[in-house]
Image (cartoon, rainbow, N blue to C red):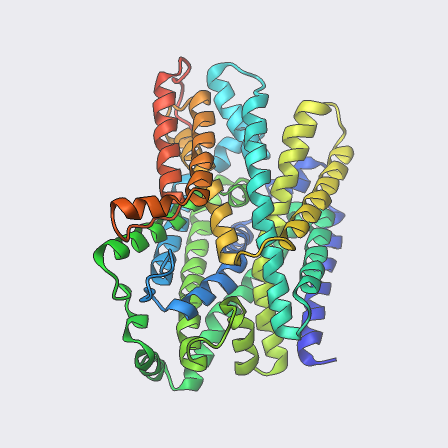
Length: 500
């Protein structure tokens, strides 16, 4: 057995052991879904970041930076890597400042274990509705729809990493990764997910920070790297990419829009809800923002260093660059550890999304609509069956879709960010937000994203303003925000206390 394979096996065994140990602690549904709201700031921050960054950062953004440099001088990509990084760091910081603390406090006040249940309880307090199946089931349906694509993207990322590392067929890699992720999620619940995320977060830091720095030093430092890249195309190191003003504006707006999506991601919201106390928020926020700066910056640096290392056009699929670079730079055992960092990013997101989807069905559909008298033991068992079912569906989708990890994730991210971001933000900070406004905002946001992505809206837009192209989260978020505001002002129950 090679050192690379040995390190990989040890890593997978460790995840399974954590899951089995955590499975012993589950006494009730809150334990299974939110670890009983007992997690400290370090675990919450690392878990939130590991879940928020996923395979799209380790393979997708590093591959994008390798393919197009900082600003994409070819002008063919939608989101230049540099502006995606700036937007991502800005967005995660904004979410920690405006969403984390009020959501932690309010979710505990209402006893809400999921985002759909939070909306129902918060808005029901103002409208007098004790139960609102329409709102709860709509939110659950959106989560299930978008997360199935998102989880499938993580499974594909695992398959690509294992194919690049061991030469396995990609579908075999997808099957192995999916099986491990589903197993430790359904066995260990949120506690296992949080602690495996904590472990995986450290591996992600090693992969994204140490690998590009060591590779750069082997090439002779930043001066040598920049000389090599500039010799290929000086615009690869330019944050404008030599773009026209309109095309540059499109890239900047779309990059920042990626950051807006953080406010509407249910798998990140549950991290805020799981903190042991709202007073832990400042410390967790500092840790998460530092983590984000290091990993986003490392992803971009890795892509630039890889251009100097391999030259351009070395990979038919640029999302396979990172595992190859690790094997060339490090000895086998260390390369295995770094590649496990890539797998960690994918797994830490997929497990979170599996659990959130399971939570939504178990708590918001089965418990609230079908069997209100179900015991905690039965609810936990139901959650595990739902986890398995969603995992199988995502695996099936991963074998059928041919789009890149980056594109799959951007679609799901846009759908969730547009549907939930504005309604959640307004619920927490605007006292006139109404139930009808939230429903209208959710529907209009998701529909805008679907139409924008599937009806060639960017082609129509560029016909009016040449070269103007926008990521679908830009119109989706804006439409959802305006519709939620407008409908809320028309709703008779739009008064009430501010949620802060």
